[in-house]
Length: 343
Image 1 (cartoon, helix red, strand yellow):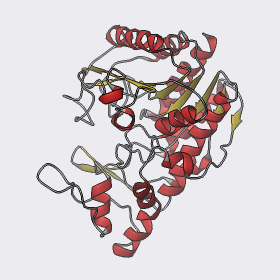
Image 2 (cartoon, rainbow, N blue to C red):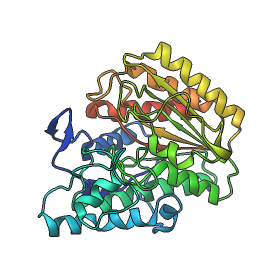
Image 3 (cartoon, one colour):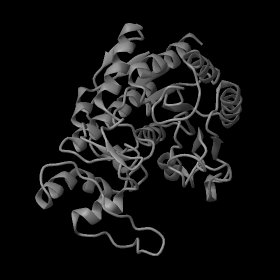
Image 4 (spheres, rainbow, N blue to C red):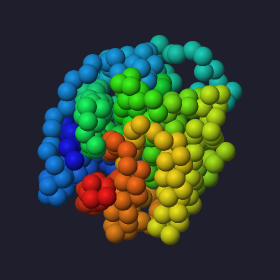
């Protein structure tokens, strides 16, 4: 399996995030991708390639143009207003507030386009997220051109980013951008299977009214866990997308006995959908020792995930999402990939 990787992820290197009422060093850090790369090479998974540059066109097929412009200019506007330190939002337009006006001030723009205070914009954010999208698109191109599988070692991750909203460490939705690129390249049906601990709210919202992309997610129950406001079982899609969105919310403490049953049910529904290609949002923050997650999967469970996905027997693009037990993230991710390759 080829791996696509860019060193430019290092340009997203924030000072702190707001989590659990504290400003702490970010859990989403450059070392995450570095450790995955170490294990890719140690396991001799396959060739490691640099991404191509695809420009903004494939990004704008998924994300709102004003939102993309905001991401590209936010740092400069922030520095002009406040100085050279990480940019975080101040407040959010919720319930009784208006949501049909975009503020002119950078503080207002940050609040309008974000949904949390744990996703800082830094001097290098725009460069890093463009590179991450290019990593996903390069993997997509290889699979479109005949590779049976590829691994897009993306950082920053993407599955929380909606059409015009960022948060959850995510700015551009790499999985959605790749899924749309598969459609543009001729795939009639694409399935996106999200196995990150947290619900892929952004991916769901992007494809919620479409039948050509089937979104399936296994994740911590939104009654218990971030992002809290999407990911319930009754979210099945709307309009033409009704029946093409499927969620498996699982409670804290979930181990393989429960997770494996849900995964096989998800795999069976994807098989019935008969996609031309599958995109996997590969989060390994389901690990029992992940510092911000509360599932109980063990290292020996990750090969089972890869084997289950392999049963779909479809061209498959894996895209890295979460996983914050830094010393183990590479081991767990590569176990999924290696077992998929082995069948």
